[in-house]
Length: 167
Image (cartoon, rainbow, N blue to C red; front, side, top):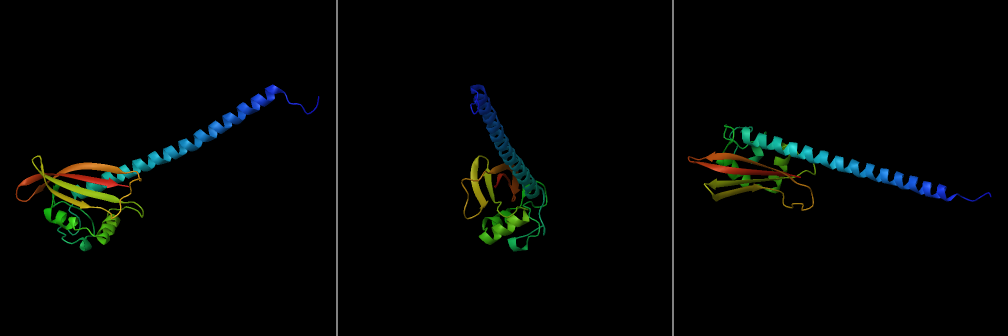
């Protein structure tokens, strides 16, 4: 008879459509997952490069005391991993305008943010805390943090933990 469908044809068409839907779903989720992982790796690499800049170079000018005069941002006193106390004190007074200037100097694009925190220890005791962060911190954005260590010598040396979060 004409116009009748075979039950095997209906079942096979359903299986083919289900298979095509599954493949399309997996392809789109895999693409977005790969894109997210690639962005995460790029942000992590960028955060590591920024900490290298902060901990190995004094910046330009070398002995900056005002954030408005900085051309290249660096926190050392000229020696790698030895932070300049004066630069940290200046950084602690980070205004929203200074924050945007530092963000641009660090090479972060529009929409990318950072949180820089420096904790100074005398043995095991926290003796100082310095931070530069935006006024509003996103709780939902994926964050990539690098933790590094350095010293501050003024005249006695103390350990400092530097945490840079990029998002």
